Length: 75
Image (cartoon, rainbow, N blue to C red; front, side, top):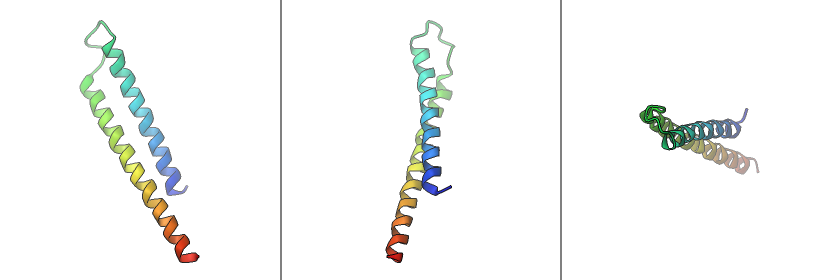
């Protein structure tokens, strides 16, 4: 699997984690019960998803740069 595809899969995973955490926070915001969601855990999930996405973007950028350099050397 190419590094770009791996990075895209990682971005999709981070996006899923972010959406799940956002749904949990929204569920808490509209709930009458204050203990339905651990906001600290969801905040950590949001930060981890952001960091995971940023790392995968960097991997994709590096892979693209490597591909460009390879093509320049070949061609």
